[in-house]
Amino acid sequence: MIPNRSVITSPALSGVRHAFFTREGGVSQGVYASLNGGTGSKDDPEAVAENRRRMTEHLGATALLVPYQVHSPFCLALIQPWEGERPKCDALATATPGLALGVTGADCGMILFADKQAGVIGAAHAGWQGALGGVLESTLHSMEVLGARRADVSAVLGPTIGAKSYETGPEFLAKFLAADAAYADFFTPSSRDGHNLFDLPRFIGDRLRAAGVRAFTDLSLDTYAEETRFFSYRRTTHRGEPDYGRLISAIVL
Image: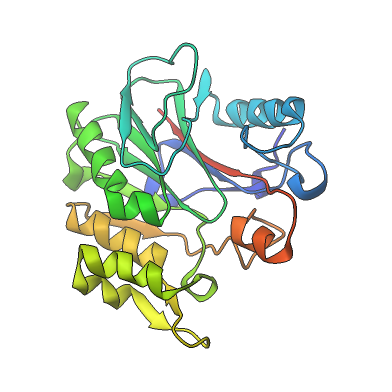
């Protein structure tokens, strides 16, 4: 059982079962301690399976579905669990009760969506590539296909690397400016010459509002800064650690 204190929820999604799971409440050891949900990590597969079983139980779901994430702009609309290999995409949507839609992250944005009136939910994994490439808009489109209205959608951003922790080089800024010169507003100079701090949470929120979402909530949880609660790919890289755990955020009707 995962202690309730180890799970983060948002009032913006009240009435819809959901969870932004932290790294607490699982059985994994070492750098993966303890609620590692990443099947792509080098953790003991049995430990990851037990962690996911606990998450599914906590959500009261019949299945926890997490895609094979590839930093793409693609969202898959589901009416039932898939069979065989996980689909390669970075977002899911459904109107089917009992199916928990999940995404993993360890700095990238994990966004949960719900149109409570229509009974449609979604979950998206949005790092800078996905957010810039359109995964958020794809999620909203898939939800609309299932009957949602984006003006009625509530979107909540869970644990994500914060702007103060996300230093980037000049080539990173160039990618954004090539897409839209106005994106310079999401960067501020860092202490290192030629480097900037990128505000991924604000970029995600801006994209969602521009796409027609009126109710966006950023939980303002920095994965890099809060080691005891969250896994962080960037923190692991800076320390030269061999691998890292993955957080899971999920939602279910």
